[in-house]
Amino acid sequence: MGLLDNNVCVVTGGSGSVGLASAKAFVREGGKVFIVDLREADVKRAVAALNSPNADGMAADVSDGAQTKAYIDAAVKKFGKIDVLFSNAGNPGQSASLFDYPEDVFDKTLAIHAKGAFLACKYGIPQMNDGGSVIITSSLAGVRGGNGGNISYITAKHAQIGVMRSAARAAASRNIRVNSLNPGPIDNEFQTNIENAISKMIGTNATEMFNQQIPLKRHGHPDEIANTALFLASSLSSFVTGAVIMADGGMTS
Image (cartoon, rainbow, N blue to C red; front, side):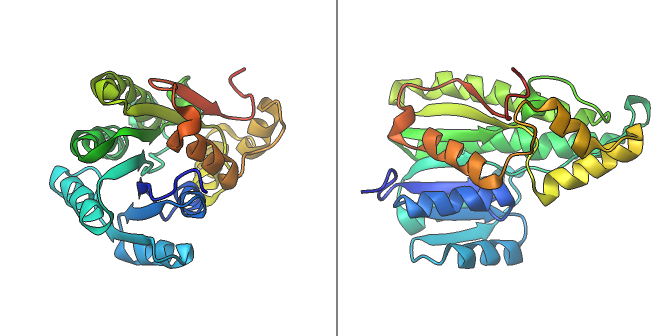
């Protein structure tokens, strides 16, 4: 018996390191996983990596309402009503000073993270089974400021927590839990690109700087974040809702 036997799981941003690691954990625990990502080629690669008849997916822009409804409808048509909705899609924003920050980058980053989470809840929760779980990937940046001046990313990650708290209240009558998963620095390409940009801005190796700030003295691994997502997806977290779950090596301690 797996923790997610026959549970239908939708994972946006499913081709990235955390999304794919989580999808693999969900399949391993008996889940049926529907991958969503922006590019069709990335979706196909992720579905192939899952190597399971209980895996499928489609390309969609999570910041678009019609496309969000389409991926929710497609998942339900393929596997049935949803048990786990993992809103994990994101982009890195851009490291720049407040006074030079591009407005289009700010708008796009909020649309992908905050509006994407809102749309996932708006269209996804009505198509969920009672007792299901919604997980929204925020960040360490969602509970504090940060170096590098990436105001769009920091603002969007704070906003996702607001979406989570509102949705947790709205879905509670159906025993649907909604929580925010907030990773710290992760050893992956997404984080490396952010840290390289920060390094250029501040003239210091941001990766080493973060490692010194993390009590465990290292970046996290995608599989470690996936294990936290699995906890939130499963009945092990049956009394956890409206919560901000840090997975940051103690960085906010």
